[in-house]
Image 1 (tube, each protein chain N blue to C red):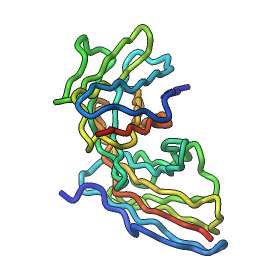
Image 2: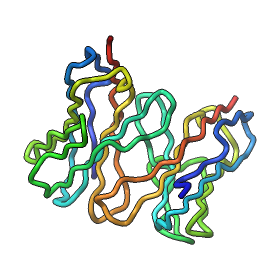
Image 3: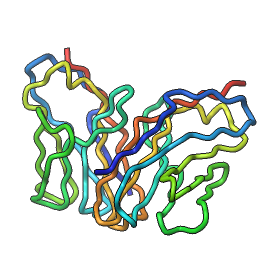
Image 4: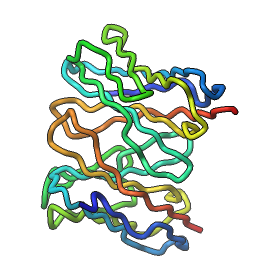
Length: 114
Length: 113
């Protein structure tokens, strides 16, 4: 069974500082994809970043990077130089390569303080 | 491309009423799914479909029906609404490559009184 755990219900960060949002996953699959989504107060789900289980390098997309530690089964999202617009819910998700189904964590609410 | 569209955006129902949440995608994806989102619980899978004519239950299917007569459309039916079904509902469409993200609709906010 697949399980995604986000242990930080809420996080605060000062504007322009970096923040790490934690995500651990439990799977017996060897091939899978890891995803992070942002959900602002307007409600839409916005795809941020993807990491493949066989990718040797950590994924980066602008100010977002994914700290992938396969042995620990963790896929933490790092947001650098936080902006007020980063205040939102953030969800970690996993998709096994053999299934089209996504498995989501319960999310972390990030608040950026001016 | 419009991507994934959902209607309505908001809906208020009385207990016992039925309704259908509409979902359509124009990306020719075979796999589509319905989630509900409740505070503190993330997204929970209600039903999914791997292609026209094929549907299956997810984690929380009770009280909901789906059908998939075409690749494009995947409606979700609430048979007899209950206050416990008050939630935000997302439809999603998924490409076959596992490296690709799901595409989400804008969501439907449902309140059952």
